[in-house]
Length: 283
Image 1: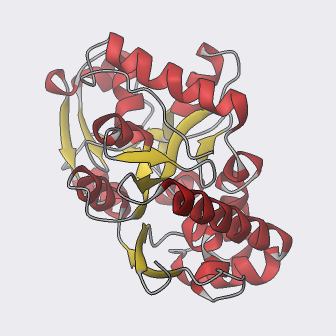
Image 2: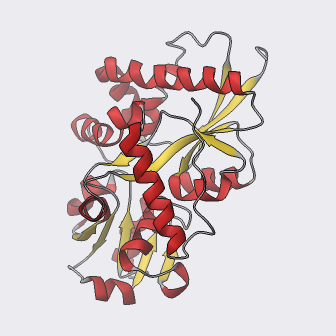
């Protein structure tokens, strides 16, 4: 097993780059385990997960509902919106009723942001007018008139005012208000069940160590992550990393796990996903 290189997929974004800094730069002892990194946008990673292609991958919690028979959740690597999250923005403030009727640019149909949007609007995708746009082109789509509103993720949550956009709804704030202050579960890391259980545990410990290393060496890890930050200086990049790499990322904990169950159970109840999966974590 030690001669095998495991495929590891994650997004080319500051938070993922921060998380995997120690692994990417060989700064921790991997005990003979080797990894080949694939940097791709989250929608592509979600699609690859449906085909079971990568050994380890960042994934949307929404997508996990479709791949739970193939992948187990790793306890580390979560992106949780703790009172904040994906945002619906437009050139002028729109009401919930107006958003239900307008054209919305979304970053991918398997993203957790899109599932949260459907939950908030209480509308399935088939009853919404939406266009799929790369997440870093959503502002452009709205300005160009291809969409009336945009569902923004990643650093757009910090830069939308610079793009002359108005906030219509923060879906993370809505989720917390509806769910006893629980964070909105957005992304996590999964590992393929073809990998032996003992190796899954070793990889889980390594990913935890990589995240802990970055949190303990924050300045150098943020400097590394800055190369993946679009239109952000180091202060803004550090703020963004802090939003999505924190104690939730080291381990979901009971509240994080509860939030995932609520998120997917509610989506299943409303017919937005086929069924609520049984959560399987590497322990």
